[in-house]
Length: 323
Image (tube, rainbow, N blue to C red; front, side):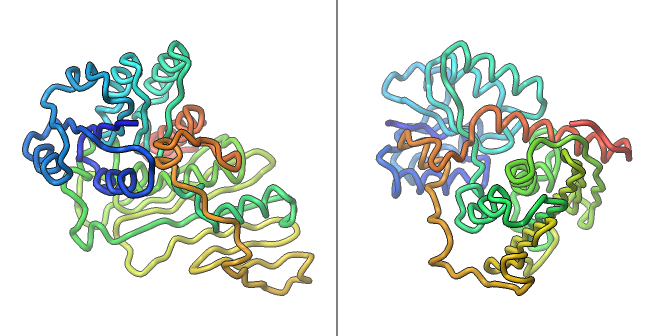
């Protein structure tokens, strides 16, 4: 299909463009951006048609799908217009800033008998697919605790765009951006969340948090912890899962110990891991969603926004908040 990139505001927009062009059977043909200079620069770089009017782009019948990589506070309006215009929609996480906005998008999709694809990319990774298998197979027993840490040095390294600290555009800081990955992974691994309690701090003096932790309560007494931030160096993504029969660690590789290994730690070789599945944007561009039963649709998107809303409410109230 022919795809339009809807703003190069997000740091992933350029990567999505390259991924579609290099790895899918679709092509990128157009771009709209509310920043005229930015949009025209990328249009020139990729030889795309540049639209100054989003509504005019949506009237172009040669464009079949749109990639929404604008500021998050524009998502709802841009997505609803695209749905009503009959375009297929891919969206950068988070789908929208409120659950009510997400539900409005869901209703529009229902009217068009359509779905949306969200960039929950870590659910495609071989290591996390292995973790999902270990949880679902019962090899770790009843899960009691899981912790996901996902951080980078964007603030102390001064490489994040300044607009990533704009609360109005982003809805928050580190948690709503980088912390989305631990949030949706914990939901995927542990089930539906019940409550969230958060502590967000600021190291570099920005107007939003750059250092954040949310503790999430799941059914059956399971505790999940989402850790994120823009102020850490040399920290690989880390997942720890504990259960009544064993535990699993992902950190520069995968290892686990359980009753079957008599408590001995086993390192999982790369050829023992499941195959990495195509990223959400490639599945979307190739119309191959749902590989291995992994979903990135509207209900996944709504749950992520519900968790984020509760996390930010809790940081303000200092109390547990219901998801």
